[in-house]
Amino acid sequence: METVLSGIRSTGHLHLGNYFGALRNFVKIQNTYNCYFFIADLHSLTTHPHPEDFHRSVRTILAEYIAAGLDPESSTLFVQSDVPEVSELYVLLNMLAYKGELERTTSFKDKVRLAKAKARNKAVNEISYDDHDDEGININAGLLTYPVLMAADILIHRANYVPVGKDQEQHLEYARVLARRFNNMYGEEIFPEPKAFNFGNELIKVPGLDGSGKMGKSEGNGIYLYDDEKTITKKVMRALTDSGPTEPNSPMPEYINNLFTLMNLVSDPSTVEFFKEKYNDCSIRYGDMKKQLAADICKVTLPIREKIDAVYNDTDYLRKVTQMGRDKARESASATLSLAKKAVGFKVF
Ligand code: TYM
Image (cartoon, rainbow, N blue to C red):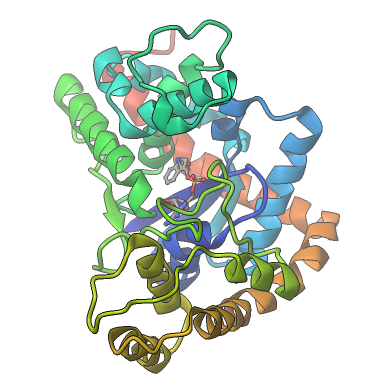
């Protein structure tokens, strides 16, 4: 059976981007493949979370995974740092990763610009990546080698498919580069080349409701699985709109298109069609559309939300799940690590 693997960073509650880009697919796929799903707590360390928040966030993601329908009996659910073999493979892969290619990674450049903008109290678009004054700004080596750790996560289980959102596409490409480089250098087919996966469809990008770009934690525009109905409605009603088109069949501005993109994910196709027609004949009332969108988001998220607290508070159950996941993940990881170390030339005296 082919292997599927994916993970989400533990940086607080999951938002609709995480859900539609990743978690929903984990749930759909869990009974079809040999699945590993984990909580990327090591990756979350790039932003230096407070030690108390660090553990709480891991627990939050685990509870939200399970509340959304991930079954610890069907797939291996584990915490990244419970599997030290990942960190060991990360060291080996770091030797094959070049500084230049890591510096050119889009996510790294974006994070650097964001960090500099925050430090200087400016808007991101006012900051250039090539501004080399990094003094006192948290641009650590972990941020630079983030894609290498991600490749280690994937390759340690010799995964074939990785369900992720569009923003991770470049990282997946890099995991393939490192797999190829390792296989070529050591002359063995140790690692299969992992492919991004969305059931044969394009990877998706869930937009934010603030006009442009994606929904994200650092963008501060998230609608969370843990939000209640009132919060969701408030967030959706605040979404940027205008007074509506004045010419039939006008091109859609990005912020309106984003509303339709979200609607496509949560609403009935006939509902989307209804509002598209209204847009095209200039009779659309964005207030009505947003009310409908909020209600349809709630239909997806509230049944998940209802379950989160009970799972989160069940310490015995969570302990059992993570121990079981850790044991299964370590078994697979140590088998791969032995192959890799043997190929590199490590020998036991
Ligand atoms: P992270 O934690 O930023 O995001 C987790 C998953 O959610 C998806 N996602 C989105 N998808 C669509 N639209 C959005 N607006 C949106 N925002 C987030 C991401 O694409 C991702 O699938 N590096 C990864 C975590 C990771 C990982 C791995 C993933 C570590 N090791 C190995 C796969 C395999 C990350 O930061 O995701």
